[in-house]
Image (cartoon, rainbow, N blue to C red; front, top):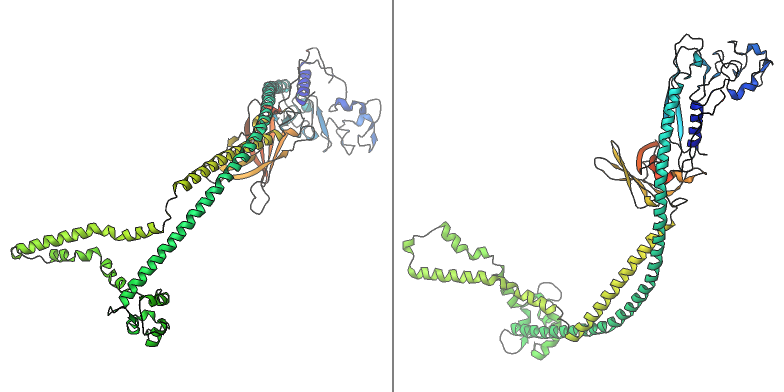
Length: 559
C-alpha cells in the first residue's frame, strides 16, 4: 500500500473509529505501556537506574533520559505524548506541559522525494505545532481553558488527502492515455524507421548510379573546356605577339627622326629613360650596346634591339595624349565663367562673334556628349582579355554535365536528409522514457516559468536555461544527464549537468523534481546552493493508480 493510501486509512480510522482508553501513566504512548506497570518498580528507559513506581510523574526528575516524568515538566529533556484522538498522536517537549498555552496546529502538504515514496508520486505531510497538543491533555493542571481542535484538524487533513487522491486518480487516467499514445507513437516511429532504411538502400543505389553518370559526363566536359582554354591561350599569345610587333614598328618610326629607314645611335640617345645604369644619361657607348654595337639598325635588325628597350621605352605619342584627357571639364567652361564674372556690353558683341560663340557652344556640347566614350578602349581591352563563349558542341557537353551534377546533388541531399531523419528518430527511441514510456510526450517540448526577475525554461531530455525577464543573454543551467531519483523509483528526479560555468565556481546544474499533477507545468525554481538549481515540475506521468479506500465506520483504534 502506498504512502497516500496508508495516510488516508489511518486518518479515516482515527477519525471514524471508536476510541478505547488503555490505562497508563499520563504522557506515555501506547507503544511504551509495558515499561510502566504500577505493580513493579520502574527502570529508566536508558537502563541507568531503577526507582519505585510511585516516583513516576512525581514532578521530580530521577532518570537522566527523563523517562520517569513523561507527564510533567520536571525533566528538561523529557517528552510528552499527545493522544490527539480524532487526529494523530505526537510528542511535544515536556517544557510545554502546563505552560498555560493552548495547542494550535496547522496542516501543510509538501512533496519530497526523500519521504514516503509512491513509485509515481511522493507525499510528505508536515504538521507544524505552534504550541501544544490539539486535545489539550498537556494543560491538565494549568487552569487554561483550551479547546480540543483535533477533530477539525483531522477533517482538514482528510480534505487535503482526499484532494490529493482525486488529483492522483485523474493524473493516473491521463498517464494511461500518455502510455497508450507513447506505445502507438513508438510503433509508428519504429515502422517509419524500417521503411526509411529500406528506402535509403534504394536511394543509396540511385546516388551511386547518378555519381557514375556525373563522372561520365564530366570527363568530356573537362576535355572540351581544356581544349577551349588552350585555343584561347594560343589566341591570346598570337594577339599579344601582333600587338608587340605593332608597338615595335610604331617605336621604330618614332625613333627614326629623319625618316631614313634607320634608327641611329644619336636618335636612340634622345630617350634617356633607356639608360641602363640609371645615371640619367644615355651615352653613345650605352646606346651602341643596346644596338648590338652597330651605329644604326634597320627594321629587321631592330627586332633584336626591341626586347632590350620595350619595358623602359616611353612612347612620344603617349606623352602628348594625356594632356587633353587630364583637363578637367570645369576648365573647358572657364570662358563661360569669366563671361559671367566680367560681362561685356551686349551692344559691343558682333553677329559674327555670336555665331562663333554658338559654334563653340556646339563644340563643347559635343565634347560633353562624347566624353563617356573615352573609357570605351578600356572596355574593349577587357573584352579582348575575356575568354570568348564556348562553341555549341562544348556548351552542350557543359549543359549535360551540369544536369548530371544537379541530379546527383539533389539525390545526395535527399539521402542526407533521410539519414538525419533516421538518426533523430533512433535517438528519440533510445531515450529512457520510463517503464511504460510515459515520459515520451515531454520529448521536444519546452515549459517556462516566469518570476519577477527571470524566465526559466525546461526542455525535458535536452536542457534547462534562464533568461533575464527584461532583456539579456540566456544562461545554460545544464544539459540532460540522467534520471537520478531514489533506488525504488529513479524517475522522480531529472539531473541536468555541465551548464554555463559560474564565476570562479563550478558549472551550473539543475535537479528537476517531478510530482503528480493533472497538468504539465513548472511550479517553482530555487537555488539551494551556489550554481545548483532546483526546479519543481508536475506531470501526470508520475501519478500512480490509487487504491480504493473505504474505511468502515465500525472500525476502532485503541488509544
